[in-house]
Length: 173
Image (cartoon, rainbow, N blue to C red; front, top):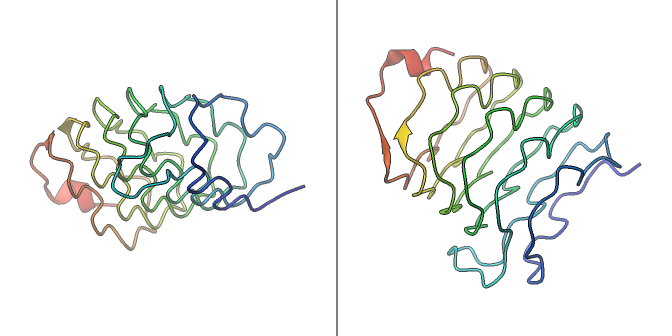
């Protein structure tokens, strides 16, 4: 079965629907979904793009996936909150670089348990960059279970509604 679906619909102008929870049920051994649905225009003004909420179980049973970089990037019509259990089955994921980059329509806070099952995570670089609709405090325990993190560059860059005070607990991974 197919293991690499990187950039499958990258810049596909006609991809403009809601995501379904069963999207990956036929490819349980996929290892890379890098840029799978990355929107067409980098400036976040894509005329088309994914709409609606992110289904909590879209990545269910994807235990082999290692790369989710830029999966949702620049889909600024995605709305609602990031599901707390979104990555719970992705135990081998190492990179989520720019996964939500430019998703301005996402709202609510970042769940503190978002990456709690991802013990191999090492690159959350730019994960939330430009997510100006997200609000609340950066959870101090967001990366608590991720001891391999080595690059956090621009992780919250442009998150203009994120608040709080960072302290040493945040970097205690």
